[in-house]
Every structure is written in C-alpha cells, then in structure tokens.
Length: 109
Length: 114
Image 1 (cartoon, one colour):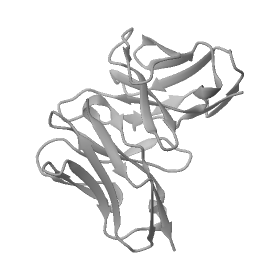
Image 2 (tube, chains in turn brown, purple):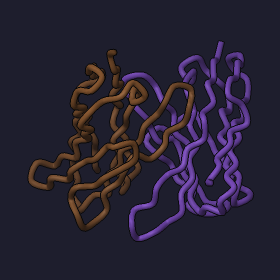
Image 3 (cartoon, chains in turn green, cyan):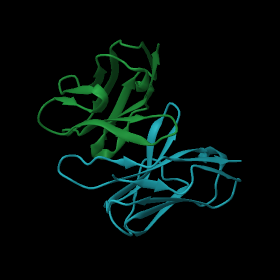
C-alpha cells in the first residue's frame, strides 16, 4: 500500500517569501502525484500533477513541484508568496487515492 | 467546467438517524468517490465507484454504505448516525485515463451528529 506524508501541519511565511511545502510518499510502483489546494469553505481543486515525463511540473498560481524518485519526494514551491495563497494544501498519490494530512499555509503581511 | 454538487452544505442530525448525502456530477465521469475530512487526518476514502451499480470499499467503510443507481449520482448513507461521524464529507468524480485522472471535488457537506 502507498502512503503520503506531509511534513508540517502548519507553515507560515511572509508575503513575498519562498513557499516550500513538503511531501514524501511510499510506493511500490511508479506513482501519479498530485497537489490540491482547499480555500476556506470550498472543495479541493487541482494545483498540479505529475504522471510521467518531465519531473518539474508547473501548476496554477505560480506553483511548481519536482518529482524526485531517489528521495521519494514531491515538494511544492512558489518563489514569492501572496496573501491569496493562504489555504490548506494536500499532496496525494493517485494510484490508490491516498491523501496526506494537509498543510495549512498562512501568509503574513 | 466540471461541476460536482452536494445536496447540503451543512447538516445536523441526531444519533441513530439514517442520513443520506447526495452527490451529482455533470461531466459524465465514470468514477465517483466519497471522502471524509478531519483535522490532522486529511482526506480518508470511504467508498468509491467505477461504474453504475458498482462500489468498492475504501479505507474506512464501517458505518457507511453507498448507492449508485445512475452514472451521475453517488449517494453516501449513514445507516445509524453516531457522534463519531461528525465530519466534513467530500464527494469527487473523475474520468479514467492513462495520464492519472484528476479528481474534481464538490464543496463538501459539514455533518454534525448530536
């Protein structure tokens, strides 16, 4: 069975600072990896996904993630945080529909 | 745009009641899912369905059942609601593909069982 670990349930950054949200997975087969974002009182929406091919994946709102097989990681980054990025972020391994516990991002002015 | 709708945003029920949560998608997706979301636990899969009248148990099916009589509708049933089923319930749908199918989520139903 696969599992997903998100390091840090809460991350706080200043506006304009780098955002780094960590995700590690365990999988016995090549995974499909996803990042979803959940804004307050809304469902989840897709930020980006990795299936095959290029390991650096670009998503919406300036986010990107890099699949590193040797580290079993799929960390999410954004060079410069914006107040509107405040939300909860979930990493997921799609092969068996497992989600991480989520990381709540706070952006300070 | 894909739209997944859930019958209620907020629901309050009493212990022992039978509860129905409805989910409808308008994109002719084959796959539908029910998750519950709890703080610190993320999303946990309750049941999913790959076709009409078909269902598969997820990680936490105990105390729940599902029904899929039509392709666009997937219902979650709590046969006898208990307080530990107080949670946010999220429905999702997707279409199978070789590229790893994206799930589209509804807005969620926040269920409180008193």
